[in-house]
Length: 597
Image (cartoon, rainbow, N blue to C red; front, side, top):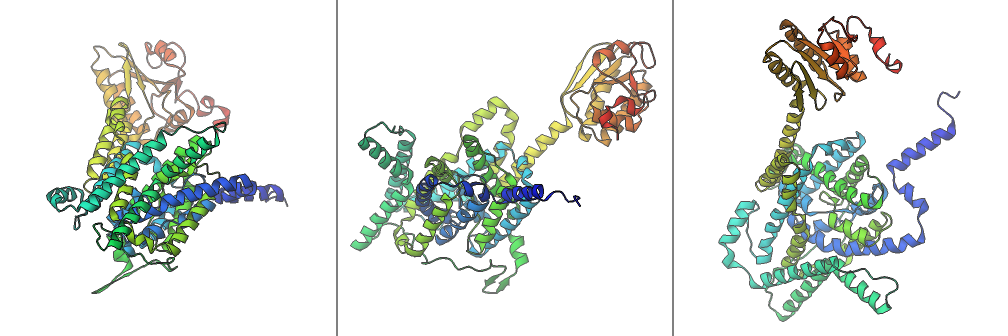
């Protein structure tokens, strides 16, 4: 009757599995009143950052401003229950907005459907434990993409700083058109935009150089520190508020030199199914056609969402000593995107800037996201009429200020010193992203894959010795590498003035496949025709078992290359220490008892 195990251990296993899928169960029972105050402060601070950024990022995505706010609250609520990092906040980001503009064609219906499908894909990847796919996107590819995205997004907002309209989306055409039409710049937009940029840069620099105030300092000093820190942290909200007041004053005087955001629908977004078709003047675009139009975006958007969130979570987890589960992060993002698509959201992911604000304000648990989400909902319900007066130049300054730090100029110098070959995928990704984002990512991953496969096909081989050649592969042997190994051994052995013996040191080889075994059998036959002996040494148990199972003719194995070298002069069957061979020794005598099955 104990076949299913005792009830208590089974209950503990069930609770452990439930806690792994619902991380909120891990911290909620331990929640203390002291944490509540810090979570409230962090949530309000992040909320003051996310509202202006959401309006600005909707512009990057090519969508009406309200869609940025629609995308900013569901992720906060979902991540509170499913997220594994206390600092991470989900919402619209510059990178994801750029991808949405490429794959949603500035159409809200496409953007919302992309959110739903990307969420479904992320859920499936999380349930199937496919988070390891992130490991195939190398750091140079990510750095090349983010650096190019920083430049692309910044140039995309220069038109709003200058007050220009009708600028194409493609990067090179943008640069050409802005230079050609620089004379059409609206002075009001340019002055306000540059002033906002200077203010944001100054507040950022002030915050980075602000020394912490100790508790022993006078009350006035600590109050001054708190005021300056709050202004620097909520700089986006302050700049947008100031610019809105300036625009409102101009509106009262009857002249408006600034380009305004315009009307934003008031109220919360309706809860409805994502659009699985789209009405057009000539009929209806069916679901299949919409999916075909989005194409490779259905793979790029979920993966880049995972890349952003996990990279941010790992960066802050290493500082706070907790672990990140990529598969659980996939589930959290998947639920956030699927649920968000019912509220007209476009795809969301982790935001580095808002996560940094969250961490710096001392957030204790993901419950801070509940406060942030509630603040966004309040803004949608009561403040949208005030958003009318926000100048587009101010929102452009917020975006440029957020994305400029993403450009990592030092990575080029670092890779040049560490490994110059890594500059190839970095530069390929960086340059192709200026053509189209998807081409840059795909090209970078392909180049990284080719370099990875080349290193597998051409493992380092060290060949030493004269009469007896010692061949030492520097890594495991896989089927693309066997021809290279055969060519190196045969060329060195046959070019020797007299027949020699060869020792293949295999202590670094942890696994082999059938193609390698077949190639070694052919190598043994070829060398035997020329009177050259080949012995193996340092074989690990798994590799030895595979070679013995193949029953290679003339196979000999020694525990070390020194013993193999002592016996090499006698050749096969000669005197010296007795080698392991496939004809005189059974498999069971060579393997540890635990490996015999």
